[in-house]
Amino acid sequence: MDTCIQKIREIAGDLLEKGEVERVIGFAEGSIPMATSPVAISTKEDAQKLCFSSTCGLNLANYASKEKGKKIAVVAKGCDSRNLVTHIVENQIDRDNLYIIGVPCPGMVDKFKIAAEMGGEITGFEEAGDTLIVSTVDDKKELNKQDYLRHNCSLCTHKNPVLFDVLVGEEVEEQQLDNAYPDVDAIEALTADGRWKHFEELTQNCIRCYACRNACPLCYCPTCFVDESGPQWVGKGQDKTDVDTFHFLRAFHCAGRCTDCGACVEACPMGINVRDFTRKLNKDAQDMFGWEAGLTIDKRPPLDAYSPDDPNDFIK
Image (cartoon, rainbow, N blue to C red; front, side, top):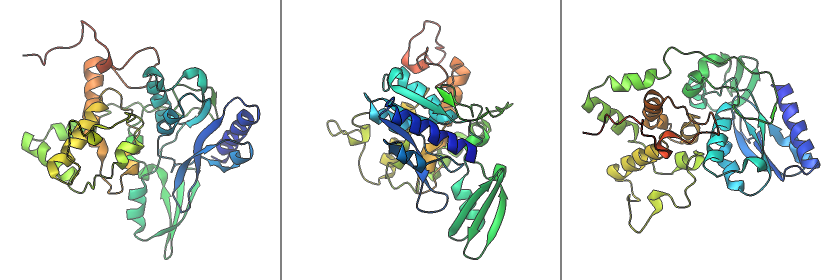
């Protein structure tokens, strides 16, 4: 990982020194253990701030689209690169103005799971290969990283960037899964009442902070539907119907576009598994259209294009 970080810094510094890009978007160390934060640097000296670890869970494509019109470089793991592809296809980013520093991703850790394991405030966090060394005031444990991967990372089949200008490490081995959607199958196996209860319980602690929306690289509408006032589509309060409507409508906006990057879950302060809203739609896009988001710049998402051969069994 140290070699990877050094290469990221060298490439970023070189791009900025030569004036090939105006900014480099990457990750910097946070102020507390297990915290990394997105950062945009514009000088060679600031390249030393860049880092990369298994705590870099947010999706930097979300920040790249906000730099439209500028020449930028982005540090991108597999899911970030897929969202960059989507942004190129949807004309949010000009490929000619984008330099992608690809990082093969071994997987991001679940900070909530680690915190629950440690029990107290975490005061130290280090990585040594596949071992996580985590400390509290009263305890210190060595944890197997593979046991604490985020759920989306444990099911990821695109760990390597799908689009890049330079790769800062050897490609990692991609997973071959017999079933990429066991969680969706479990929900589908429930009765209609059971499924409704599941989603009712899922949203019961939502505080409508919109962290999931703000972290999502797909949510770039100038005005979100929850903020529309003429007409008002969704109430702004904590009414349960409005809370559920927000989550369901946002999920459908992501249909055929979501890369399951997990940024929504990473950002949620209430620990809500927001992915439960989009995973079924990802599965349907794959089953019905053979489509996975963000793998090619040569095709548009299935719900963004019409074909006479589109499945129409749902029409009664």
